Amino acid sequence: MPDRDYYLKNDAESLRVRNAYEKHIEAMFLLKGENKTTVKNNRETIMRMETTIAKHSMKKEDLRDADKTYHKMSVAALTRLTPSIHWRAFFEIIGAKEIRNVVVMQPKFLTAMSAMIEKESIENWKIYLTWSLIVNTAGLLSAKFEKQNFAFYGTTLSGVPKMKPAWRRALGSVNGALDELLGELYVKTYFPPQAKEKIMQVVDDLFEAYEMRIKNLEWMSSATKRKALNKLHSINKKLGYPDKWKSYKGLAITPSDYFGNVMRTALFEHKRIMRRLQKPVDRSEWFMSPQTVNAGYSFGLNDIVFPAAILQPPFFSVDADDAINYGAMGSVIGHEITHGFDDQGAKFDGNGNRKTWWTKKDAADFDKKTKVLIKQFNEYTVADGIKVNGQLTLGENIADLGGASIAFDAYQIRLEKIGRKDIDGLTPEQRFFFGFALFERENSRPESQKTQVLTDPHSPETFRINGPASNLPEFYEAFNVKKGDALFRTPKNRAKIW
Image 1: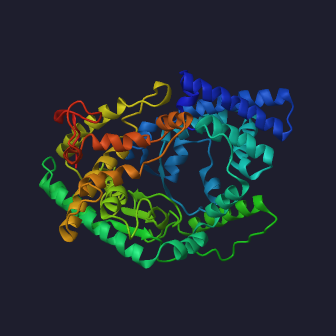
Image 2: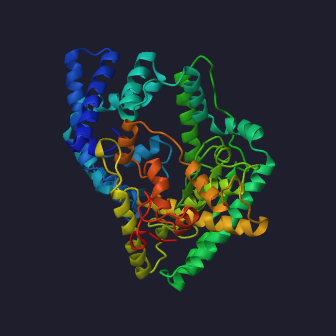
Image 3: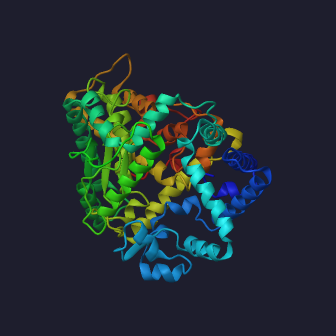
């Protein structure tokens, strides 16, 4: 299941999902051809083992904390931590026998797994590993397996009533396996040079605005400001597509072997990654394909990535009103930059090294300011009264608020160059916020919303717009928001970080 809480909690939603999951396990083993007695035993074994694993897994709130998930150690130390796991043999099998040091996210979890290996019988591990194989390849098996898998992961968890058509599912597999081959085609068709030139202009304005914000922060010390500016100037900007495309030379694709094609491409990618071990980090490498509608910031690389597919209407266009471009795409760019300076970005320097660069007082002042956001988002609810987790979503909420603030400043820089103009009776500032709201304009099913707030560090779409807007004085001024209006907050209850 998506999160440890589904195994451990007994609230209505956890029980609904857990009951459906147990039926799903039984249905899959019946499809495999097991008799009812074996199916029942398998289901009980899997649930017991997965529940034990869940008990020893970190809470989702802690998983986003680098202090709690970054544990560098030697392979010898790892072996002492987990005596039942033969790491040297494992690393040799996966092609990494030369490895000497590792970063362990959850040491206590691995210690518990080591104890489980001793405690559980080989027969139980066969059941567990068989289930892992089935559940991770169900989408590649026969139609019955695929439909049953969708019934749980698509319908139960997200409320989606039916699968995408076969051609879309097939395209998704090709896209996942041969992402940059499709990426080249996509860029040639949908991302002309002028689009890259235009987004570079927006990015430059965003960085200028961010620099001014850092310099004018009242709560950040001069020493930390210097390091913040150095980190800002060190950010690697990846826009549209990579300068060098990935090679697939040597990969065998057979039209009549769907399952084999997926396995071979996975092995091909694994070997490519293994060849990079012990070598310098390639900061030019992309980990997101050009046709992906997403964006990202990497703590370890200190880079921002905006694939060509997200730089499209309605979020961005060479021909669009700048207010929309800056409100929608500019806010996303600001969001990703802000991750470099949020509660976790403060733990990585400009080169992506794990190093806290804030003073203790700066960190304490920042933490105090973020508590306002945590309280605000804890009050938001979705279907069945399930509340948003303000602590889990803190990093993304900080980035949403910072992104909108910086994008607004960047748009003001743009207006100084092109001049102000009302369109259809709307001021530039009002159109900017329309663009900001446009980016999260979507509808979610109740099941999807519930799963999201229980597992996802991103808040539901409505709160990602109304939450930041209710804190921004520029929004109040643009729409003359007053006491009694739905998004009004008293000044003392508004969050201001960047």
